Length: 362
Picture 1: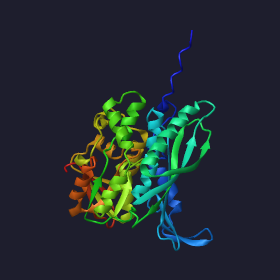
Picture 2 (picture 1 turned 30 degrees about the horizontal axis):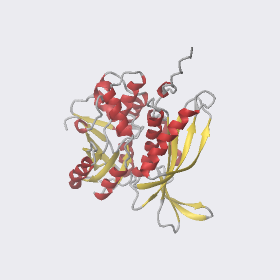
Picture 3 (picture 1 turned 180 degrees about the horizontal axis):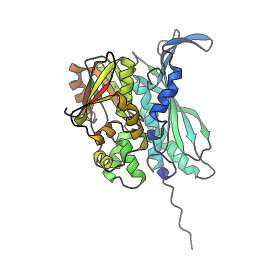
Picture 4 (picture 1 turned 135 degrees about the vertical axis):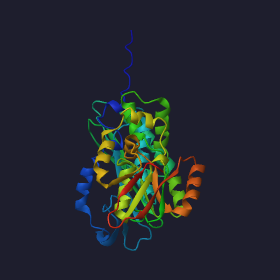
């Protein structure tokens, strides 16, 4: 009599937190990064002089550096996440898409990547890791990114990600490039953190899971191309610190205030119902707690929608800053590509104290 084959492990049960919701809390990270704020500066690179064009001053999505004399700057980033879905190939694809997105958020073109593997090879089958790598490799191939090496660590808390290098053709779309009078355009729907929190305990509907996976495995390359074509001056990708956290980086970096039209925020199917039922990751709640001193409200507050605005996304969309008259054409171009893009707010003069207003009447 043959013994039944052992079922493959559910990846989400191997970790305590999933995706970008497992990052250090926003308040703690902001405190740590404060020690690295030096602005653009000259540095020694390979015996020559180079420039740091974008560093960590305003929590940009990637660094932008250039060796003196080179025509194009390099865009450099790294991102590692824990599993937030159970299928290993899908997890690998999401992790790769999530890491590559930081290059798009800076306006760059990704070129090369190193894989970063944290895996208990003495406790889990290598076939599991092979499937994760297959998913990542397929996603990188779609993005035109070559995986040229990597590093592994034996670790009981599974993680996977990439270090990515790209190049910049044009001005970086940093958090310092926004201007008063611009519109805010969001290219993907919110709610990934809520849906994957419910997935972990078996409470997420199949429709919600499918929509979240489709969103997380969609590259932001075409969204960037649309943004460039319509004159976007600043961008960020909406990931672990939520829409509010990443918008706050633009507000601080550019010295502008922002107003969000809360009823216009695109939401993934099932996200509102699951958030109402309490399936909100701890990282999302921590995001909101850290940002609340900078928030103002207009109209009757809606706590659930506010939490969704702070929801910790993984492989989220781009938040684009574009001159208001050009926003409708940008949204139309994005929707033609299948994006649920929407104008979600506007930017105003932030002097003397930039804030974010949550407008529940708009």
